[in-house]
Length: 462
Image (cartoon, rainbow, N blue to C red):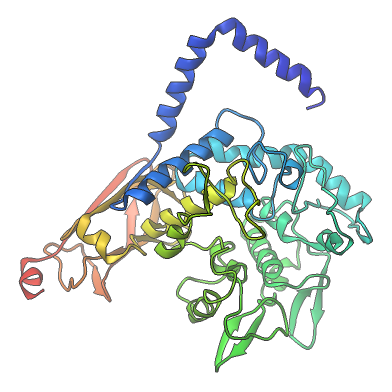
């Protein structure tokens, strides 16, 4: 706001007049409501503890506040206290959305809305970072690091002025800065590429933005045609086509970065079962950046957070620790906690697809025997999902919170060795350990409950 000091004093005076006990009671009630939004029950005590702690940090920094955190919460030590739309802010919002904390997630959008006028001025009037300048005829320009009022921070070195061309921070920023002006046709690739930074992250973000604009009816006349010709960079490696950092790049053994998988886990322009995704991940996970990744769906990766040197200060916070041991020691790196939440929820629920829901898509076999469950995790389309996995039975509940009926295909992971179910929904199939059920209908404002029980014959055969 224009007068933050006066607003702060007003809030302090109001708190003083109400008294400590009233505020304490109000705060306690807020936390009770916050934690009741969703829950997970894991058989791994360490992961269970850290899921609760990470959820707590998300509440600390996004609950009852109008200002989202920067990379390291309230610390001004890292990145001058800047907010990070490049990756961190999006991961924070995803973690809140998955956990059914919609009100808190909306604060991210609230910040974007407040700084949009500044971002629009950057686009129209131009932005210069050291020796690199950009200027556009319309739209908005977001940067990878921005102040609370929308100021784009000048990076410390001249070479980092290339940030001025970085668009995926803007694409992350609710697509408010979708960059079409920098797209150019390349005959050598028979595709459209960003003329300044045609990296995989940029290309995937632009493709996503074009598709969403077309789908929502806000696209320019030629955007649909462009969307069909955006290049997602790939390269040949041992006879297979894998994702690459950019057009013309070469792949080598033990190389690659999980950010090159952003077409699938950020922007959803590639499907999970596309062969290029698995083949690319098999290579990238062997690289030096294997431990420094915001990848989802891997128990090993989740446990990497619990290593000595990553868990800091008497079990209180996560950090990146990729440069030296002094990195990010002062306060929690909020997006690290968010990434941890995203990782675990993605093991329990595949929620990002608008047509299909996957239940327990990536839980380890030992969890199946001990039991695992979750309540009210959120899916696209205002659906809340709850499920419980025991040794021979799965229970699934779909709650449609929207005012319209919905239809989803359902994939449910079954206990190991299951070939038959005791009772079966019409049209249900069992393939490769999954119960597949097409066109599951959930009327508006109603709940659909399903039970999958392994048959006695299956148990004796097992």
